[in-house]
Length: 306
Image 1 (cartoon, rainbow, N blue to C red):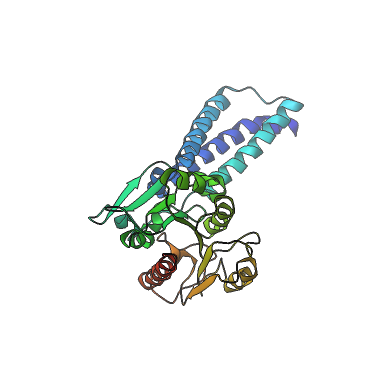
Image 2 (image 1 turned 135 degrees about the vertical axis):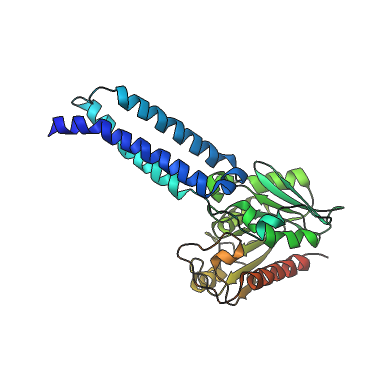
């Protein structure tokens, strides 16, 4: 039995390396726009995965049998770890932005759009006089996917900064809000979609912006004593941040928090990135849902002005 395993291990190693290369190619070919325009961490992840897989293939062609004892155990553990890494590589593949978000990424006569490795900035031409908004995307969502929802805010005088999160995970962007407020000055609100909203709430506790906005999201902890203004905008058909979870969040937020439900909207309609597993079925169009989300957000930001 041991000799059979020793003979099989090199072939298993080659199969795992080939699987890793396949995962990299699949992610790159099916989500290249999101990889190229997202935080560089996932692109680096893919590159390192490909390099290690190629190196493993070359090594397996020349390697001797694993041998007995600890060497065989180390090799088996390494293969198990590689499979877990491959699974993570596939899971981290981002949801790619679709129209009309891609068109909204273009600068206009009224809004200047600037993209860097770590953010997308939408500035009103001539300078905005409204409260700015720092926005945290949902987990693994291309940050460009929110451009069509956020551009109208910039058009109305509210500067917008969309955070590009490492690996598409908002928790890895903790501390970004404080840096933006310090660098740019002025009055700011923080917002986020889904997991991004949960992290936005954590950031609000640390950086103390003027306001906090949840898009299909809710806080992880108790914010009932938070002194800033709070708005929660949700969809009635959301299968992820459901009506029940949004209702339960009321006790965790200040009594003056504003709740708005967009009838017929689901979770993915808070961005432009296509269907999301586990979501509900909407009965309003993407355009109508977006219009109501934008309207509710603008009304809330407008209420902050003196």
